[in-house]
Image (cartoon, rainbow, N blue to C red; front, side):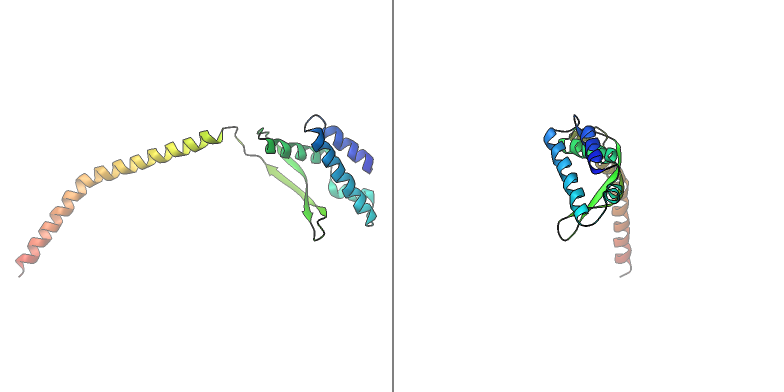
Length: 155
């Protein structure tokens, strides 16, 4: 695969999935990246091997775009990650594997559920303390009174 085939495959995978502006930004980025690396002495083949499959890159770009838009797109992704060096050049940095654990449940519903669970737990704890205090407070008072009489009786 050469640079043009890579870019064409990437463009065809991205088209219709994300906005045309985003497609062109990504195509321009990868085109510039490949051209810069070739100018720095690397072969096109070596660069394309480092970058990885345009299909995986496209899937990662689409997932990232969908997450940013809040569509809750769920999938497992695998592709290339990049590392910036001191000259702000991005380089492929191996591959990554991520899992999206979104459940599709609205955040407000999750927060409400957590609050309800906390309220229930606190009410159970409060009830337990109230029940135990009915037994232990009289016992503590009796023990204190007995101790008070014992200490007065020794004088």
